[in-house]
Image 1 (cartoon, rainbow, N blue to C red):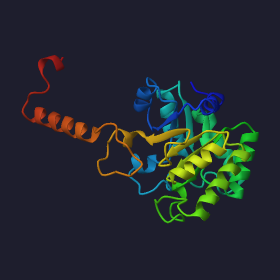
Image 2: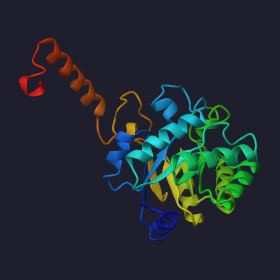
Image 3: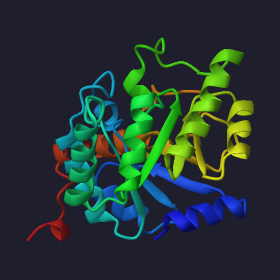
Length: 264
């Protein structure tokens, strides 16, 4: 299993880091048999698994439930759990409770927080001081999508880009071990990655980040309607699954399943 030290070594050696977002034990078991470096249990489960329109309604208990499931399926990957909306924003005590509860109940290796406001930086500093590893997240931060003008590329103008760059430096100083950079120009992803000693993980941030992350369901092509520019689909499981289900239906109706070898 990867450790933070090994992730730093990856960056130093210019060896890219692969991260996959996963929510359940069955897929985690498959990931455990691959070369993938890390698993992120993202609050994107609100949209991917629960069918919500955003990540905002996801609760801490739901994140804990899914992270436990992933941990049961994969004990040999570095696992990071998203802290959901309002589980760390209201106070330092709230943040410590939420992060500590996640690590104690799920045995995850780290938590992830979005943003770099003064309050968030204070929280990150305190969490890392008491021994809780924290991953940062800049650019498009889905928990704040409404204040960012929706799901759009961030940092396209100079002022925005400078702010994201300064926030990345501040996050590193606060003690995060890595930063997710989501939907920012490739040139900004490159500038940030070259300026930091900690690894950056990109999603729609160009090839020069220190690693890449994709949602497993998206990578496998399980939603034909979801086609963001940053996504590459490595399979077309939607078609395979639909055909399999239709074949099962037809064989059930025409009595060709179950056959004697499927019966007791």
